[in-house]
Image (cartoon, rainbow, N blue to C red; front, top):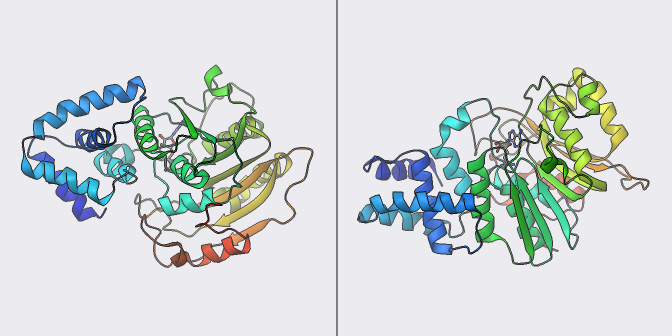
Length: 347
Ligand SMILES: C[S@@+](CC[C@H](N)C(=O)[O-])C[C@H]1O[C@@H](n2cnc3c(N)ncnc32)[C@H](O)[C@@H]1O
């Protein structure tokens, strides 16, 4: 959805004194009314009820109704809801919480780096609007899997639930939580050693002063969210489990992270490091943060990786957007070909 359309939607609802989060609620509620998912969490039920009350305020208005219909017609299954969330809750994105969503096309590429395993447990511990879980659900088609999502932001957990209930297959079970992954509660650690695949774009480089649980990287002096995130994933994965994530470019290249990289090599087999250019997140936020794709496998007594792929995507030519076709991703598609990955294959 382009910025002009978003502005028009904003204008339509402002006439009723509705703005920001409430506009997002009305739109999401319209999706819920159309798809009427059956088993919903109590948090989603409360959100839906609030949305219904707001919807009543605009229901009599022809333009407002047409606007909602247009949104649905252009995106029947609500895959663009994270974009609407970002637009209508911009304030949340202005703070330093590192909430920039992964463009759908990039999430699809990263998900295609995972092998499809029947019954896999797939986890995104910082799931935002559920983009990775949605791509995993598409990739697994009607094969069984468990989709686990978590986010510290309640509203994002609700957003993930909406998108996944509308889009996932019956063979996929879904469990979403609202926890702080840097605060190892019993609920957080209950997944230790149980996860096959982690897909994630965690918040970048947030400094963390104290951390109660054991973290090898934290003890080595890396007191930031990136280091804790890596140790967190190591704990959650089964031996040989896969982590495909985005991490700040500085981790890959800066001298200050040399020791961190050595620890990574002790604990993980490195399958791929793909350096991305600036502008990767242009379509979902105005951050210039550089992020790289990392594909790691938790070490076990078996060696899995015979060839490490180091890719440098110097040019995306067109910014990754939510509609772009993969053929246009240039360097990245060449790199994936090298890996034998066909992003459009569902096999
Ligand atoms: C960079 S965004 C990525 C969101 C989503 N995975 C995506 O790729 O579009 C990072 C997400 O991490 C969440 N987050 C930040 N700190 C967290 C924490 N301590 N525990 C769990 N989630 C957290 C934020 O709310 C945000 O949704």
